[in-house]
Image (tube, rainbow, N blue to C red; front, side):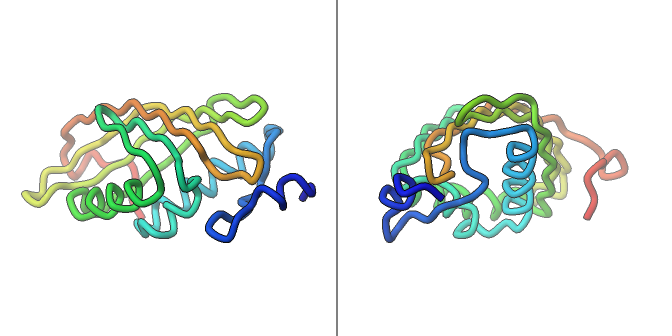
Length: 150
């Protein structure tokens, strides 16, 4: 860790390796860490990967800051039951990573959905995500058509 990264990390922010600039190996590791965290469905754990002032676009919603992200995720996983996610590295450069993803979940009525899309991520020097842009589409599926099982 460089002195600059250590100096920029505050008591509320931590250093989250791997750090930019990304290599293919470190970008893949960052994507896998995100997939693992999101599959935990632990809003607090996931929110800690973002800067305190992180800016999100998620579909048609715009979120600002870790507290809004945490609340959004807690609500999401109350509605999107048995959520299961897969992420795949699409591209990387410097402090940015692009992924494609799909996840499956069911609503309270039992209808299964497959949600898929793309995300663009931008990280600060401490490896925290400061910006996330997500475009997502949903399609109803039968339970028998699920691809993502625990």
